[in-house]
Length: 202
Image 1: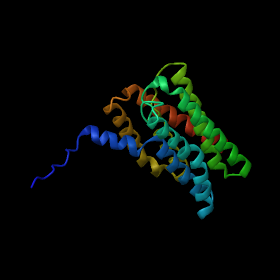
Image 2: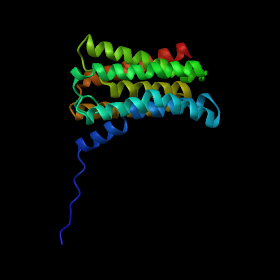
Image 3: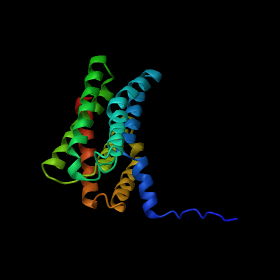
């Protein structure tokens, strides 16, 4: 009788787990539901959050996964910068459709402001990726934005989420998907744009 020895837990395996659990598509769904829940009472707020998440997180993330399986890009995180133009444009189109739906249906102000902040951040990311030809980290941009929005929505005690941003940055560098500068730039870009646009629009 033979026994199977479990694979050792290595830094790369932990980094991969962090990268997948804190993927932009997942964090976007979490923050939209959290803000929707805050912006409107009970199931109404949850419904608004899920509607926004459908356009801004679930559908785009599904397209990324399907595209990777079809061989359109390297993986669902689109690790090759040269392949990022089309996925980013697809995501922007989904978010534009989402913000239009929220506007027509009369979504709560904070939720609309959050989606607007996402859209601005996406355009900034697109500009850096295409014009500057630099692979800024979308993972840390979203994580940084989520941390700031949670603090602005629920209070400064949500600063406990800031170490998660650092953990996400570490995971991206550990997996050699980004340089430290790209992860820091992503976190700063996401945090600043999310905070400014969320408060201005809201």
